[in-house]
Length: 169
Image (spheres, rainbow, N blue to C red):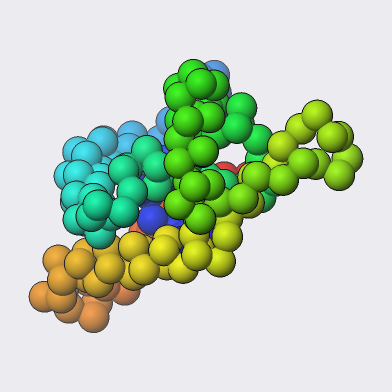
């Protein structure tokens, strides 16, 4: 699922959002933020449900989120996975170990620091993520099938704005 612009696994971190209170916020920006707060929970619920249906018995949602994080952050550590998920190191370690045993992730000793392990997705893991994402994308597309070309154009333009504003560094 690399290069994914969906919000399933990549919600913006609060630290990435401007917190400047000294600058007045234009009314249009406040209105836009209000609409996002109203619409995004329903969109996220649909995204999560579509992803869960695609996962089936293969992975749990936390395992998928871990796999996705490892794919997007090659050579990351178990500690980084734990921080991303907001779980203990022991929990993340057990989750990563299950992904390794399933053949979706490999753990290698770092060439730069032999005390550090680096995690990488395998071809099998990347293929699984692609299948899951493709299935979820097709399912979500069915919710948009009745949109006019103009509505889809507006949606894509709006999503491009959100992607620019909330993209991870």
